[in-house]
Length: 340
Image (cartoon, rainbow, N blue to C red; front, side, top):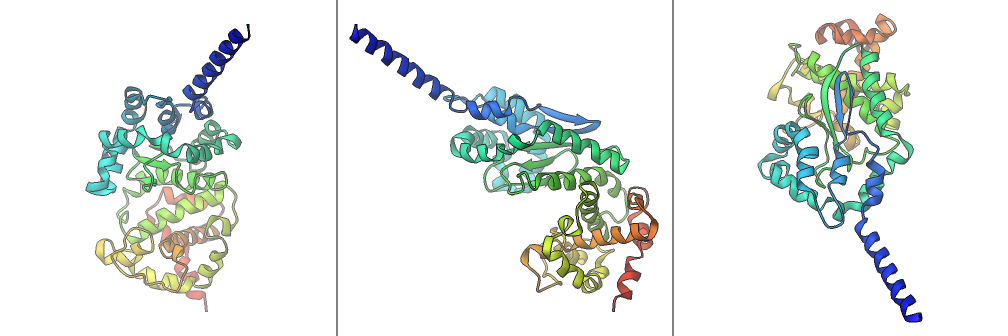
């Protein structure tokens, strides 16, 4: 009798061990199973690709067919025409089908702890509601109908990207440092506004000039400031905001000559907009993290001054008039010249 009991107990324990092993990723599966495959408001859509990157894995199998249909195919344009291009010939190969399969086969095996940490955001934020809210708000507040596609995913380590190449290839890598409960609202607000403004600014003759880029980045910051009801410091650079305001006249005076230049001629302002590194910075003695972001501050301040001079919510005129006209009517240059 004892022998039978021991045998049954061994079978039971073995069975439990097999079950636990078989469902190694069940906790991760459970976290994402109720997340929608994609969320759309009008012609703006967010593909929750990370969900299917996880569900493609079981204990002993990577389902390549499922992965093809749920991860690669819906985001083919972003992989082929953006990620595979911007990371260069060598690294771009990892964003082609064979390369994508290679790092995704071991994604959970190598990074299951980090993925669990990143998915902990879902414990305090309803992702379905969050994404829907952002997609709705950016169109209602700006009075513009947006169009574009996002891919929210886990990319290969060391190649985190927040942004994209155009409206059809916007990417948010959840491995990035900004994917946390504190920063996620600010991140999405900023990038969503880019989706709204990009088709408009592309038609402007100053789209690729220093002014166009400055206003594009400044507007994304300003929209975030309005939408999330942030303080000036929260919308810009925290305690470093005061430093930029203190040096505001110097910043404008040095960058303004490049407002209507592009290419190499405009390199100094592009250097301070995180667009080029082929020339030296002309605003010096600043914390390193501010050097490439000065035009975000400058564009924000021009829009802020425009609203001060033209009435509440007049900042939305930027969606209707040429960027050069908006700049002229802001009175910002006159404001700077009045500073002693």
